[in-house]
Image: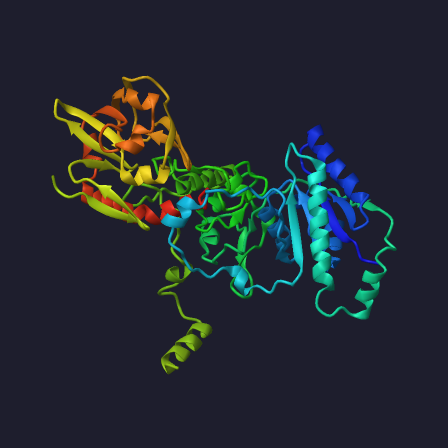
Length: 342
Length: 156
């Protein structure tokens, strides 16, 4: 028998009856389809990494689908942050018709080559498909897309040289299982933390220098990570505004650009207000951070100001601050290597 | 007339005439000879290139009206983009170009002439912050990267 494709339906925070209806209808319809196994989970973003839902997600080593009220990027990198890794599965549902939207970009933009953190990561070769609930919407559309993914996932699964086990399961496909529907109930309090889109992040460290609440850290490869997510100040998206690559996502923020909307303008118009004189993101970010510092009973950052009178918010790189500090053993070792002139 | 300066937006040459001054929010500023203290403002080629075909222009109030620098004064929508509009200086907007309210495409047709936006009476010394054509081209070079990021939707 063919193993059904797992579909997780992440319930939104909204108790809007129409939204709840969409979730329920999609879940019910999917439960009737023998090609999938559907599981309802609480809001993906709020789940604790040590909870039941994540322990089940972490056990999977095959493709699966998540349907949530969040943008695809947001859902994908939330999973990644919580240890559920995979390639970004291609979702056709909800993709905007891209007529002439690229025209401006194509002829004005210069291509840039930057190394992204994702190129250095070891991500397993399975796909995670993140679909986004939209309201209003037709439940059948989600089912159609799930079926499309299930079939393409199956084709990949049996391609190559199938082993006897896979072959048997494929050939005995008519012995399909009973409709499956389950739900994971987990008491999940509301959370607020950033997730990093490593397909955009260049490890520039602007965020770790900017955030004064100790949210960010680095791993043993000196790669940025959200080390203490729950240190984050509820509602504050300031680090996302200072990120030069827009790699920091706050999935529940009201502004689509911060909540992980796709980079392509896809039918949406470009907002040029910043270029035409609106206060810029750095100013807004500095103000938001000051508000949070004061709420936490700490002093706001002094407006040291630069020549333009705008507040200086970007700190010196840490290496610069270390100049003049006493050298430790590692420094001496590195100096020694440098002097060898290899 | 002297040759306009040119700033290359990728493949696109944006002409910056040397016969007038500029504000950093991509408006040109030119004194009207008949009223020595009044300055006429309009969009530069850089701004118009980013906007492309203008479909809609609206001001938040009727002229004359006092405004502060960076105060939001109106909004614009084009085929590709939308934006709030902000006052380049402190002072008073003496009149808006009424032709544009009827048909904003005048901005595309003649940006440095008939497609002007408003006449402005600046407060004392406000015009000191206006840039020469040379300085404006330098400013464009500085903001070009952030402009590209905006176009790519990578700014929040």
